[in-house]
View 1: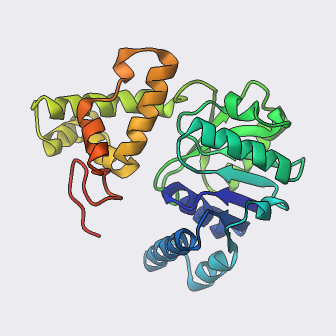
View 2: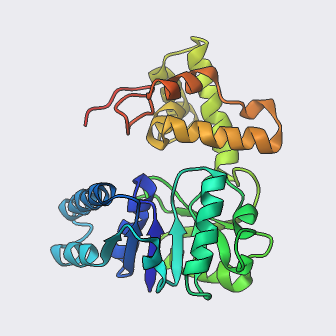
Length: 281
C-alpha cells in the first residue's frame, strides 16, 4: 500500500519508519529538504538500534530505507491510499492542509490525522469526503509504543474505521477506538496529570525527580509525568492543554505558569536540550 505522511518531525518520521518497516511504500513530505534529510537520518539511526538489538536484520533495514521517498511537494500524495497528517497542533493550519489534501488525493483515499487533541469533525468538515476522515493517534516513540488511538468522526464510515484498524494491526500495533471529543481519551486524562505535576513542582512540593519517582514507584507508571512532558515537548503539552481549556471551559485544563514560562524560554524538553531535566545531544 502507498502511504503518505505529512510532516517529518518526531511523530512523522516515526510513523514513516513503522510503515516502511512493514513493507509499505511511504512518501514523506515536509516543507524543506534539510528537515527531510534530518528525518531520514533519525530513521536510519533508529533502524540501526533495532539492528543492534536483533529486532531486525540488515536486509529489512535496507528494504525499509528503500521504501521511503522524500518530497517537498504535497502533490506527491496523489497515488497514496492513506495519508497521515502529523504537523503542528494548529486547527487553522490542519484545516487548510485537509482542504488541500482533499483536492489533491485520490477520491477513495483515507485522510487521517495524528492530532493529539484537535477535533476530527472539524478537519472532516473542510473536505468533501467526511466518511474517509479519521484520527490515527500514534504514541511517542512510534516504533516502540503499541497503542494507536483511533478517533471516529461523526461521519467516519464503518469501512474507513475497519480499514484503519486493520492497517494498525498489520503494523503490530493495537488500535483502540474512541469518539471525537477534545483531547480524546489519552490526552484528556494525561494532560491534567502533567499539569498537576507541574503545579507541584512550581509550588516547591517536591523536585522533578521526586515527583516522577513517586508516580513511578507508587502508581506503577513506566515514566514520571515531568519526564514524559519533556519527551512529548513542553510546547506540545501547552498546545493540547489550551485546546482542552478552550473547548471544555474548565479551569483544571489551564496550563500551569511554569509550562508557559518554559515554553517562552525555549525549554521545550528533550528536543531543545532542557525542560524539567537537562539532556545531552
